[in-house]
Length: 464
Image 1: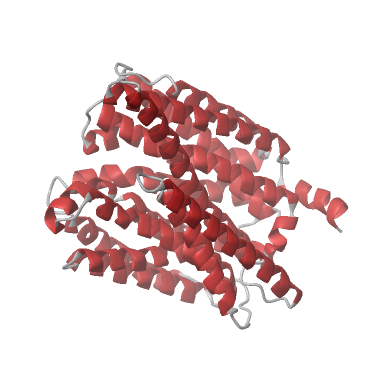
Image 2: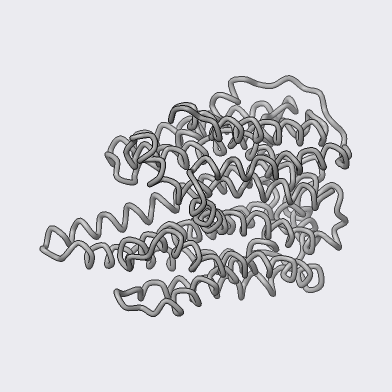
């Protein structure tokens, strides 16, 4: 059952990054600018940020099969619509429908896993989940680079559609309902403030890339205000036992520490995932396909190590993996601060593999410890908060490195430095920011317990 959900999640997440290499083709085919084309990725991320906060409530109210059917149906409709889209507006709408399905799929996988897998096996199974969640975005650009060698951008959706349809059919045949469903009314005020708040925050952060900084900052502030309104609303609804997103999850110290660690690690990872292709393509002159192939071994290494990390977690607990993993992340990002016009490609490859191995050793234990610290009725809300913060962290990490890089490059260009050298120096500074963030990951890692059940005892002593 979990294997089926992992496979479905892999296919839907793959689509988040599959469009990156297709942007030049789309610009030619649809006569649009690069900024307009980038909306295909931005809208996907925005939709995820707006929909995921609602999934905690949704997953408690519907059966496992209904949630799976909803997620995969939305994804299939979006994919089919994208394959035949006559205009850019239709293609953008199709991506939003696709993303809505993906947003339900990720928390569904996490929640089901926590309900059906005994605690002694959770690390191993979560390792397989890490494989799907981490390898899919890393493989997206490389897979799309290969597919685009054979035809137009529509082929990206034509290839995915039958695979997704087959997985949906298998899932509907074999999937069983787990857990009890609850009946309650939905608070539409919460839905609107969550979607506008988290969506606005992610959109505002994405506007820092080449947009008006003051406008972007205003949108971010508006998003944060709406999130604050949403939080106060949830605290009020919790007293009536009907919140859209149950914030009692944050009273669990282990869960909150895991959440902070995951968010900062995601910022560092996404920042480097944005910077590396820019460096390889704009500074070193590699094609999108060559870039995809260079970063592919790191993605594969991360995925293949996931199950091993999971088994080690089941045997030894989280600390022995998370602390060394966090140190390895810091070392890899420190290495990237030395990028130059002549850095050998094998060094870049080795640093990227090292970074991904560090992240693999960190993510699986952190997810397992964090969700393991919750009671079963809070699993869906815990998964939902985790997914929402992933999207916000990704947007924040991207905005941070792009803003730092651009500001530094512009300052150097004003002093008369050549464009290439100014951009290179900007990238170095952005990698330094990533390395500094990773030190926070090490500090947070030290605060994590070895096992979630230890956390429960600590919280029992401190909370009640």
